[in-house]
Length: 337
Image (cartoon, rainbow, N blue to C red; front, side):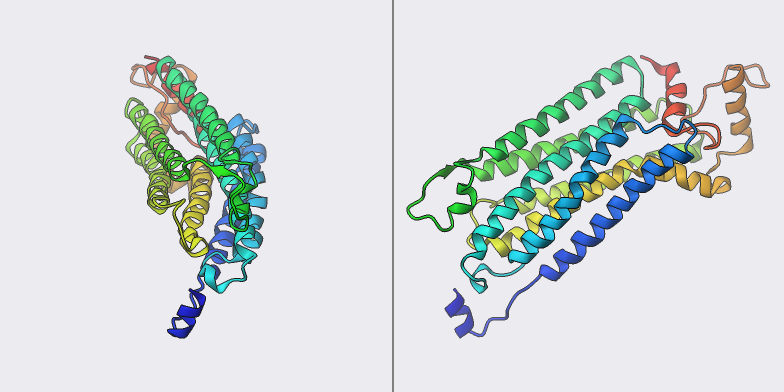
């Protein structure tokens, strides 16, 4: 291919620069946003507590740092975004080795992202029925992550055959159907994403929300569909995952969408905190009106309004008096069934 392409005067393709820009920019933004989330929860929120969902997403960020390095030093440094026949022969097994490490990082991070969301919903929605669903979802996410990480670590026997197959002849190992593995992970991951968007949306409609807050909360959760869109695009990129003749070029899409999926997923888990920060920065714009606030105060104090009617606390109130999850639990107690 090298001789043919050179003789025909074909252009030299190199998209590694785009991958570098995406990897560093999205990674840095994601890490900074999580840091802001944790600092806000610890020092500026009413209860000053960092919850289990925060610790889980922090673990995902701890993995993000070496993942960024692997993407840059391992993948970009060994030919991603270039045609394999333009690279020195030893580059392919090195590329495959770093791609394998990146694959494991991806599986762990996406499992942590889904688990963090499950724990957040579990704290927000305390009704018995929804809790059973959320506990089951959290357990599924843990099992999902463990099973696929173990499967990834044993997909080739011996393990180093994953990259040694490119220079060992005759072959000294075997791999199971990598296409089936990639499709199973991507398909199930997409299904879980959709499920975790549906769960909060069907609960929000049961809460007594001012229309401003209802729109804000719904939009916040709808933004989570970006993760599903990215997952769908990644699913398309793994159609011929194990049948590539030009891996450093063709797997650019898989690596690109995998990195984007992880970072956007982490960003989406931070949206509730971002909403609280914006509410503090722009209280007049995001407030739900004086009448609704008065009803909220009456509800929190005595459970009745000035008109003598029993009031339900709303899903979100002024940030100065409560946080997203605390007020959600207060509101949701009227809907335990």
